[in-house]
Length: 424
Image (tube, rainbow, N blue to C red):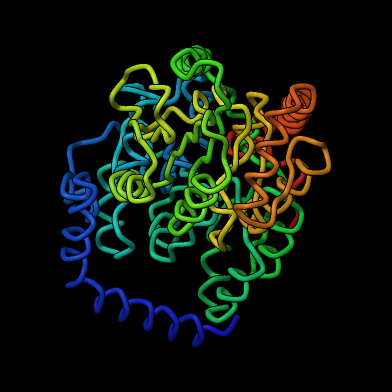
């Protein structure tokens, strides 16, 4: 690896970071207008904050999805008696961590990737080891962790062909960062191969940690209460929807859905709850919010899931679920949770973030792929009319989820010192 290429790419990266520094307060202010959590604990984003108990297992999970995926791993370390420090980048991720773990873990925001901020964080935390979820390649975070003697692991790693192409533009810096990890646990062999090609030296295929997230009994019971509030009418869920998708879904629903059908609509991002509510009303659809905490009126056409941490309950209450992020090119959201509770799954054409999982779920009979919102609605109507088909899809989903568990134990063993199965 040419030393000059690394030096120049590090220099360019540092310059870009310094140019971005004045914009950070503005960015936090603007984001805080919709999600006030961005206005709290700002010092932590620069390595400040209250003292931390040392020698913890440090796990970094960017936002909600990564935090949920990390839960089985967190529980294994807690059961072992280890302290756990969980860092996030978003208020929603931090709130989810609080719901899942309470005061059993230490919570912080990860500092921005300025070397001085990372050093400050590491001096306060003094972690025993670090686990970075998914593919968060922050060059200064990796470099300063290595310098501080903190072994780093990349867990549940995934890397699309598009992302790999982007990383090749800074190949020297990417290779140096990847080689700073003690080991990498990739979701699939495709992910592992792309990471190896970019320079990762010790790689294993662990599977997807999200299969190990089991539905809590409390969520299943809440789902039963949701269903009691809804009654016997058809209930179709659109889960973790992204920008632009709600309009397509609501328009199709308002045109074609029978009057007795209920759309349970849960946007991916909490800051968009009000926007989506206004969109439904603008189409003449009577709307209720989950936060109103009352039975769903017979006149209500849209039940807005404006809550956090209740996705399992929504899936448990629904007759079928469209998993969002897939109707438009957002890459798709996690469909494993729906399968785990036996909810028939519909996905759109864009599932790049869960490419292998979505393909396997379709093959297993747990999911059906649709081309657009109109096709989603047609399948939802067909499933409503065919209880036997719903039951079959639900059972296929449970078996599919069960068959792919085990990644959490493999990653736990890897981080705890068992490196069997690694190449390089």
